[in-house]
Image 1 (spheres, rainbow, N blue to C red):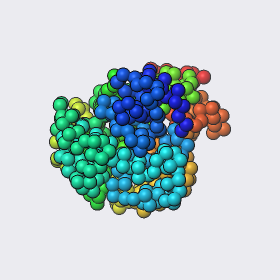
Image 2 (cartoon, helix red, strand yellow):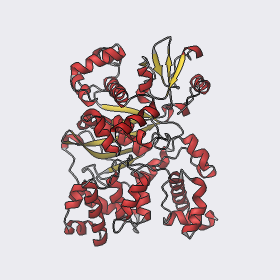
Image 3 (spheres, rainbow, N blue to C red):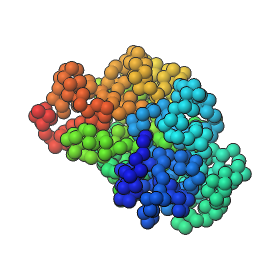
Image 4 (cartoon, one colour):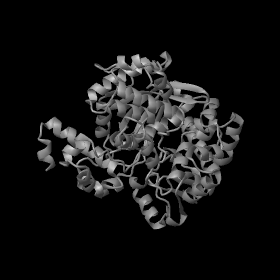
Length: 500
């Protein structure tokens, strides 16, 4: 991304949230770098230099601002940067991949050579892979010291440092502070729990996002209570499975989501926060998407593309939900979770309150390995047909064998083709998985009944003609259309008449 200094300075002077996370400003008079929305007095233009990433600012000798906290800035969406592979690598680094791996393993994970990854990364971010990873580890450690009461040893390990001594040395060298000094500055009001804030670029249609998730919430795994979404999750790291719960609350006045994690998830904080970012599409640029969709987005500005905590889970949900009502699909998925999902440890359930009329959070969603091995009678007891059982098992085996990758860094065209090659998975299912599991902004399940009804279109060719102008944001268009369809149903309106 080419940064125009004059445009950047205007954004800094106006504290424009649309640019939050798009660049950082280094201030030579203070030696710190800030987000464009920093509330401090606007620095003089001649003292400002602008950087695309926090890593680039630190490479040039700047320290992170303790007031605006650059580690809280929203990230990039997958379609924001021309180098999708470089962004995929950066996302994996953000989520702690390099805590136990090197550049070669990272390159293999996204399917390129190490040399090619280094070239891509330097071209997109202006820093090396190692420089970017070091900055992300330090910013995560800074966040953990500021926002949690975790012991320094746990902070060092969670951030990916091999030892406390190494952590102390790097922190002192880069930021001029020891861990205890940094914690002392942030000690006031610090609670003994894992609570974080993740920023986004407003507006955000939180009510619409929550409504989408609530309609599809699976008992035992998810809860929606008023303005709060909670669910279970299980993350494998370091040869261990870490299971717990996550709670999401919207703080609109500050343009952040407040995230509360179970203490059992302390070793996998970056991975858990990464899943939240994907689920809520926090890297979205609503100014770009809404402007492109025009009138379609005007009714609900800031609509997000609901992502996934786990791509395989979305695949199973899509298969189970084929040609049956959402309510029936939810019941089947809840029964599958009970028989094949890992029960939540009692410690992870401590302090959880179950909203009235909702089931408690008890199980993680079944893994690919668990559903691949689940016997036919267990599928039948859960209400899964024989045909869907074969399809789920085929997908589970492919994912477990690493033949199909359902993470956001996977190439969407290739993955959609792999999914459609599985008996029982058609275009609707493959496109739905591409939307939510891969976060692909141009995926569009054009055969969907609700989409056809609300658009008043009966043919595939007609659907293509009707939606062509929304590319490359057709997945967002689909979410808007589903939202409109549900609203029209609630109003008792004639959907076809409204579409016309």
